[in-house]
Amino acid sequence: MTLLSATGLNASLGSRHVLHDISLSLSSGHLVALVGPNGAGKTTLLRALAGLIPSSGDIRIGGDALPSLSLRERARRFAYLPQGHVVHWPLPARDIVALGRYPHGATDPARLSSGDVEAVLRAMQAVDVTDFSDRRVTELSGGERSRVALARVLAVEAPVILADEPTASLDPRHQIDVMQRLRGVADTGVLVVVVTHDLGLAARFADHVLVLSEGHLASQGAPVEALSEAVMAEVFRISAYRAEYRDEAVIVPWADV
Ligand SMILES: Nc1ncnc2c1ncn2[C@@H]1O[C@H](COP(=O)(O)OP(=O)(O)OP(=O)(O)O)[C@@H](O)[C@H]1O
Picture (cartoon, rainbow, N blue to C red):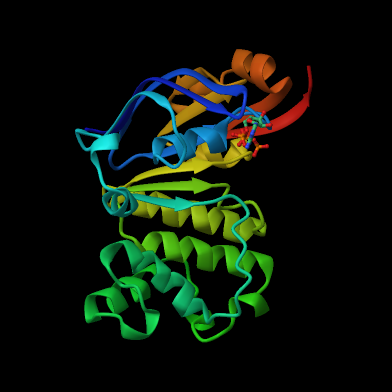
């Protein structure tokens, strides 16, 4: 069932026309990978979909036109994980995760309702960061911090998660772990959109892949079709090793073309 759609979406940053006539329709319960070369417009598309930057065209979330929603309502419907999320305040990890309850009225992490406390705990358990609860985020490793940032996003318990490179600073085991956990979140009915440069993770975990190229939607569909040999050559300028392992698609970027 379509949860989030865009029709004729265009967006500019400064004098640069970044997104060109994007139309898409994304379903609840799907894990969507948004891929494309550096500068293709992936972050801009995520931000435009959440209404964080101005755009023209029609965006609908759960049937509602995005501009008709208040900022607080948008913050409840879209949980957004920015790229390279950095926290400079030496707050305990638990308080950072509690920020995810802000759109629900929990403005003070020291005074959470029991419902908010449970949501924070669920989110921390989902990405395995409960051990860091009392540790200052500034004293965690980059990868540990990025999992705490992801827990903040999960704590919103929004119907849509937009995550910009959530696996970027993680070791291989945690990359797979985070994708598996996001897959699990999608399986509960949430629409999860993940920006990634890892085409292997996209091919393996996504239901649907969006390929952006110079601000245009170059290809979309099931991973193996959306990341066809032709798309790999035209958009990414590479060839790829393609296989199947344990019934899952394997795509390994291989060489320049
Ligand atoms: N504030 C800005 N003003 C003008 N142009 C911008 C601004 N921010 C980004 N751009 C340009 O918009 C284009 C798209 O940027 P965007 O960050 O959406 O790309 P991306 O696909 O997420 O890239 P990456 O993979 O490198 O993170 C790029 O050409 C970038 O230089």
